[in-house]
Length: 158
Image (cartoon, rainbow, N blue to C red):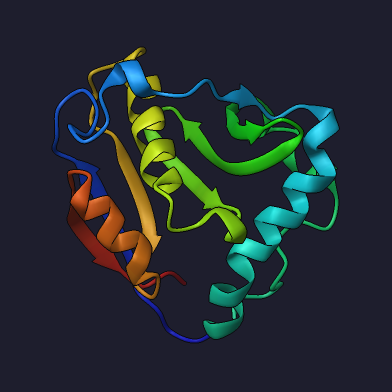
């Protein structure tokens, strides 16, 4: 593994990012069995480039859907029919593994997923909403900053 920096970010905005009124939030569904294989492929594809560039092995995180058994109830999908557009994990007050399928990038889905996750967490608590992102992923860092997240800590994982 090459040395890299992880940024801890905390949401400093309102209920959800102002660019996306709550009335426009889509309905996300929990990860269900019929989406398992598609989710695994998308997740691995979305993180492969970064993991390879940073030499984080294995490059494909998930080889078997059973690896997700404990996380499943915290992963939510944005779908169009039977196709996954993107996904986001909400673990307590932390947003994790926000992904948008490569063919749907650049259309605002990342911002939509982020706003949904913030609103979802806010339904349960007013505690600070956090996330962690590799500084290498500048596209994600910019999105998070534009949506009201601020860097609170930078560190190198072991």
